[in-house]
Image 1: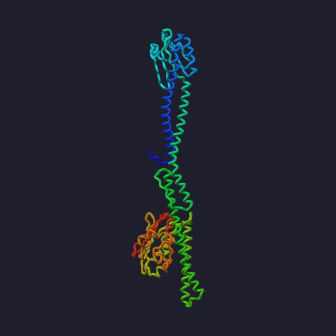
Image 2: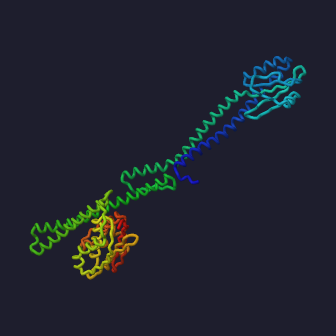
Image 3: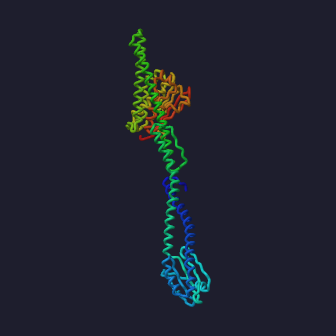
Length: 451
């Protein structure tokens, strides 16, 4: 199972740290305390029984009994058996501690016996004689003493868990927190306006997705900043050019350096034309600003698309007649729900471009088709657009031939940007197919919203 979520990673890291630290702690404690306890108990038991032969030399069973009864005070328990008896003759006050009869018999016969089943049982069986009578003494560890040892072992285990767990958890959280630190550094750079930043990651969890989103955001901001700078540069250029012309010709007229009346009229016409360019530029900029708003104006209503296109063709008649163009239309009746005023501007811009970029005596075909969507075709046999420019003609202020566009046509490179914005506002698409010297076809695809 791949750990694709940060939530799962943290849980797995925590559980792994606990399990690993528990395992290490258990092995260390078990190995250390088992050896230590066994060794110490055996040493204690040996010491406790070494005194028995000395006491037995006095030949007084009473002294030995008194010694055995005192053993619990020193952390032992004991049982004493006498040859010829079936039950213990002395037993310290402990919970049930049963020695099987076979073991008792072996010790009574003189065999020393050691039994270790740590931590449940650990005792020593020792034979001795008093006045020729065989005795068997069994001495074991006291449970209370063992309990203290166990408490020490538990505390050691817990300390080891805390130690190893803290180290392991610190290591795992370091790798989890590292990309967050990188993102923090990145956001600080973005805040200072530095958008040339990219954070590399191979993670596929939430932090990986967050890093990818951050990189995408930085890229978008970088592109937006480039567009802003280009936009400011283009607007400045588009404004500065006509203003320079207006200023120069106005100064010439004011200073009286132009004497001929026909020259004055020509200069005044240039000033008027450049003023119109500035007016058109400001109108287009305001239109784009309105379309770029978070909630652009959109007033949909039902109208006949074919009738709207006919009206646009008629309104542009002076332009296409002046160039002796042939206009062919194929408009079946089609009702459509959309913003009528905005779509009218789309047709005006596209048909005007077709007229402007088609030589005299050219042909323009206008057609509407209703399929799954509504297709509007605007085709001309004009100068065409090269393939390298076709992908950029909808960019703001982009001009295929800047000198020709400004001087002969009078455009400012915003018309097609406005067209694309309006089409997108209607959830539609605009496509272009063109070939140099053969003409262009613009296709507007509008989703059917009602009829």
